[in-house]
Length: 146
Image (cartoon, rainbow, N blue to C red; front, side):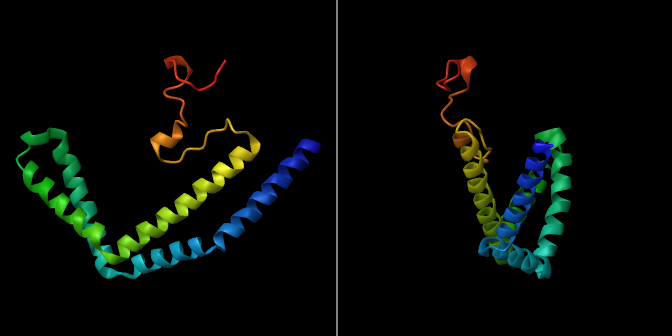
């Protein structure tokens, strides 16, 4: 019974912690930029057109350079990708999304380290995810396994 109550307490605190995150400036910026992106007709047009091009690109990639439209489709995808990457609403959303992601990674690392320094938290960065293990125990790395 004690374990069950402890689990409930931990879950309750996790929910409260989630509420703290959703009331943060970083989260507010994320929501605001997401709404702006969804309101932007130009950005939505770019996204929809790019998705259509991406489907063509995936089909062309099955045959590679031997597909008759390979160069045309590849060039068009790169041009539209550049348009997406430079559109103000999309840029702001991606920045806000990355800031929120980094906050969540930092929080996850703090929680994991509070439990045990050996707990690994995926950061999305392969250099940090390895945490100096150099390939793990089986490869002769310095992970400290016994």
